[in-house]
Every structure is written in structure tokens, then in C-alpha cells.
Image (cartoon, rainbow, N blue to C red; front, top):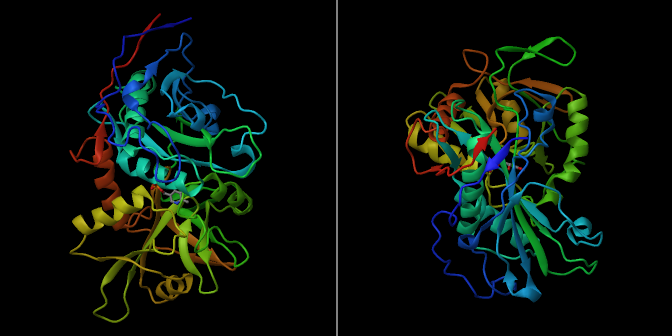
Length: 427
Ligand code: PLP
């Protein structure tokens, strides 16, 4: 069996002590702070098989790389313990572990990209880490300095990227999944006294690869390109004001599978989540949603619209924020960028009056995915897909810009380069 030749890795990169070390957390958790500079490394002696492109294993989204990060919090042992980089493997939890009963867990999702220049990069990992701290607070998990999580992800990527993201195959990627669970063996409903933060790198297929202007549906018939969305009914709500739809907690996802599986069985790609009698458009599956419409009247401006964050019913997507900033930067001569409430009825009216220009969903997994159809109460609304029948022009321009940053074509502070220290495989 191939053995991994381990290099004596030093400390995780950029490791000044956090200013918050040793202080009590503002959410009532105690003890020493998470400190990536203490990361200890134990390397695998049995490297895992890498799934082939388009293989069933890849589509199963369950194959992880050789290593993972584990960082434990224990209130009775002084707070955050020394973080570990260890071989990927099963966790050990008591059946009474709180997370298994009360959904005291949160997670993140981002991608580790292999750039055109052969370098591995993350995209704005600071945003994901900050969001994770906010999600953790929502389910009473301990706080940590977000920059320490970024350093731990960096350390894992530095070890596993060289083998798992072939430097000679640009545009490959791994999915980065930080997860945080309450582990105390107790059925008491209380703030987490023990918790585990772990990070894994998982092999994913590319959901956003271009599929051509006509693609083959499950029935074998061709269908228009773009996502087919099924608008939710009034009795099906993903999130509500005062709830936790703006946090990336597992409790938002499990219960939505019934609706998305039912939609998939009818040939739809995602649910378009509406809220309230007004039919406010919120999100598309686990993506944020954008529409481009022309305002009424001859002098009507073109608007790029997306639901606002104030009601706390949508996730503040890293991609969403980046789309908004990028559109303001590169498209302001062509359109106004507006975060505001809008309803399914506004979209239908705009479509009927030929003012609906394009729609797209955006998020880490699907990146920027044009929408081709929205079905509301049995009526299918055809959404324009640009001159090539694949993507509207605004989605295309924004996607090209962000993809350029992710893959090193455009040098930009949002592209976070990994210094791969790596492992060499000796046969
Ligand atoms: N909305 C929901 C509910 C999500 O789960 C996600 C994915 O994390 C998004 C939106 C998009 O967020 P991001 O762009 O940070 O991936």
C-alpha cells in the first residue's frame, strides 16, 4: 500500500495568538479560546482512494479526503482544547449526545478551488467563519474567533490539497464542510458544555457545469436549460421572521427535504421558497435567488433584485453578498442593484409584460445557476435565458468575474491562497 511520507509540518499558517484567548465568551461559555497555532498533526498511513470524475461515489457526496480537523470544547476542562489534524474517520458519540436530540448543531459550506495557475484557493473564507460563529450562537454552541477557524481550514487544505486536487487539472474543487455539534452526554436542554468543531473536505460533482440549451430530462425528452423551480405553497414554509432561517443550522435543512424530494419526483430542480399570503420570494432550495426586471414605463430602469436580510428569513449567502458587490462594481451603468421584498406576483406580472429579463439562483454548491422556469400553482412561467438559451447576460458577466477570482485569473483579496505544504506519496 502506498505510504504517505510525512513532512514535519510546523504550526498552522499565520498564527498570532488571538486577542480573545483566555476570556469568557460573551455567550456564557468559558475558558481558553480556540487557538489554531497549537494545531497538532497526526498523518494517515493509509491514504484513501480518490473517486473518479462522474463516478457514483462522487455523486454520492460522501467521500472525504485523507484528514480532518477536530477541535473540542469542554467547559469543565478549561474551554477549547488543543486542535488536532487527524486521519479522516468515524466520530464517537454517546447516544445521549445533545446534538442527536435537540439539533444543537451548525455547519458551513465553501469550496477549495484549484486555480488556472495551479494554486489552491478558498473564496472569502472569513465570511463563512463569521457566519458560523453567528449560527453557533443561535443554538447555544460556544463562540470562537472566526479567524482561528480560517487558519484550521487553511492547515487542512495545505495538507490534503496536493493529493486531492491535482495541480495539473485546473478548475477541480473540494467541498469544505466545517461542522459544530454539542457533544455532552445529557438529555438536559441546556447550553452546550461540551462540543466538537470538525472540518472535512468532501469530493463533490460540479452542479453548475453548462448543460447546453436543451438537455435531456429524466423522461428522455429534451427540456429547456436552466433550473426548473417549483414555488412553495402557503402550507409549506422554510423560515419565518423571528425564526432561524438566517442561520446555517441543521434544523433548517432536514425538514425541507420532504418538499424538495416531492418537487424532484415531479421533475423540478429546487423549491422556490415563498413566504406569506403576499407570496414574498425568499430563496431557491439552498441558494439565494435573484431576478432582473425592467421597471414599468418606457423610462423604466433595469433592476437586479434580491430579498433583503432584515426579516431574517434568508441565509446571508457569501455568494449573494459577492453578487451584490460585483454587480454594483461592474454593472452599475446597466442596472440598479436593489435588496427589497418582491413577490411571485411581481415576477408573473413582469413576465406577462415582457419585463422579466432573467433570474438566477446562487450559492456555493450551484454557484450562479440560471433559472429557466418557475411553476406557481400549476402554471409554468418561462424565464428568459439570454440569446444563447443557456444564461442571461447579467448572470454570465457576474459568474465570469467571480469565477475569475476563485481561479486566480483575477487577482483579488477575495481569493485566499493556500500555501500547500503537502505530502508526497511514495509508492
Ligand atoms: N441559502 C441557503 C438556505 C443555503 O443553505 C445556502 C448555502 O449555504 C445559501 C443560501 C447560499 O449561501 P452561500 O453563498 O454562502 O453558499
